[in-house]
Image 1 (cartoon, rainbow, N blue to C red):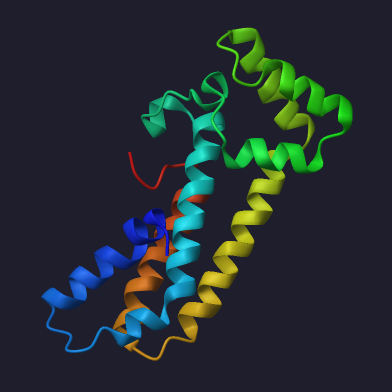
Image 2: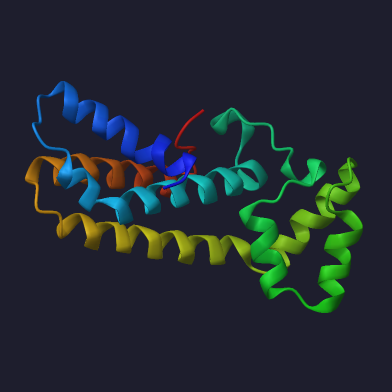
Length: 163
């Protein structure tokens, strides 16, 4: 598991289970795929909100484009971009100018990345729901269902998972 997976899933649930007196954390280990998807969803949503989120709502002033950070949107862009669009990305990504940021955001829109984001996160959510349904521990299933409801609500309301 990676740091984000631990932060968004494993550690808070392991702590809660320990404090609640669970004698065995094995059911939590069965939920590795859920931890992975929670972490992945967090990363993808955070990256998307940095670019397309309303700073008044998210509390984030997006700067990933200007700083040239390796983010989900930049990878998704490069996966679907034409050679000309990749050249545009190369010429403007990581440039600290309003014009370059606007060009990159328009490129993302032209490539339909908001729709790709929606489809991708919907798949993650569906996989989460399936994996949660297969958990053997009912209490843990309830906890992860609450997490899944929260991320689904945040996604559909364009809210960040964490401020």
